[in-house]
Every structure is written in structure tokens, then in C-alpha cells.
Image (tube, rainbow, N blue to C red):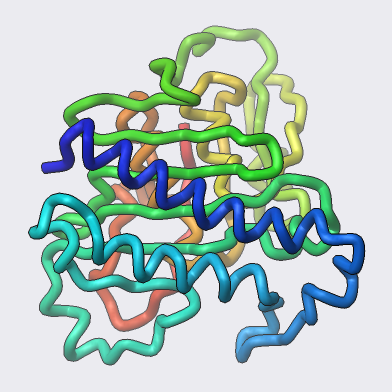
Length: 258
């Protein structure tokens, strides 16, 4: 459904949003300019989130493929769309303009711009751009998964004696530790922020990402598309595929990327 040209356009939109984020990130008066607010769920919101949101919202409507340009958008910063309307959507854009706001505020570089195309509950294309390192992950079901234009594959080291397990840098979870305690192999932790955790599994830099803590659908969809196109699985703890826009709540269940 998404051509190579359209994927290139998505990458360009993510870069443009990333540039806006970095103008704030690199500003001498960064601490003043971020002006952190707190949203209803106690998560932080900055000027960078809002700037990236406005860019993505406008640029998606300018896509060369008019069918894609006209699709509805659901963004973390415009998520108050009634379920009665949203449940009618078969295909739509799911966006997190700045994933890893806590990492952005800490200035550790581990934050991303996430744009996903969702069809019938599954992410079929996505871009994940880390502007601090100028790293671009992109994928479609038809074309495969890429990092800075080079193909990537998951499970390249599936038989390793020690598992590399990626975990949240800012959101530790007792449930995650309980899961790790039951593993039958030794493991080492790879801490990472934002949706980059799924991308590490997609490029075989980690074997496993158990997310046994809260996330929202916009947090995961773009990197989920990358992981799927790279050959990884993203499943709930019941073994079912992680899906999108199938319920009123926009919170994800616990899931495992492997």
C-alpha cells in the first residue's frame, strides 16, 4: 500500500519534525525553552512535542498520494477523538511526535519521532527517527525494514548463549523483573529509551524486549511496523498479535518483542 516514494516522503516528514525538536534541544536556553507541562496522565509535554506535532499533521496532508494524504490522523497530542468515530477507521496514521519526552528532558538523545500507517489493527508501515543521532528506521510490509537505508533483519543471533534484553531506561517494572527471573538462559540488560527498544530487536542488537508496563498505542506502532518487517514478533503475554484501534482505550496490554 505504501510505495518506496511514499516511504521516502514519510522519512522526510520525520526529519523535518526532528529538526524542529533539535532546534529546541540544542538551544542555549534549553531549560527555559522546554517549558515542561504535565498532561492528564502525568506525562510531560514540551514545546518540542507540540512543534513536531504541527509539522507532521500538516505535512501528511501534503503527501503525493492523495489517498494517504486524506487518511485520518491520531496523534498523542490530538488523541481526544471519540471512540464512536475512531472505531470506523480501517486505515489511519498513528503518530507520536516526540516519543521519549523524559529522555528529551534528560538530554540523553534517546527520543524519536514516530509515524505509523495502521490497516485493520496492524501497523503496515512506519518510520522511527532519532534526531539526536540522525538515525532513521523505516519499513513497509512489502519493502522490508531499513536503518539509514540499509536492510535490517531480526533474529540474526537467535542461538546466543547469553540473551541481550532491552529494557526501559525511565520506566522500570517489577513485572518485568519477575519475567526475567524465569528465563532459562543468562542475560544482560540493554537499557534504552523510547521506541528505539523495538528497533534494537529489529536490527538484532537485542534478542528480546518484554514490555510489562504501561504504554500507549502511539508509543509502539511505528517501531512495531519496523520490527514486523524485519521478521520479529510483537505479541501480548497471551501470545496474540499486538493490535491497534480495537478498543476504546488507547493503552496497550503488556507485550513481548522477540
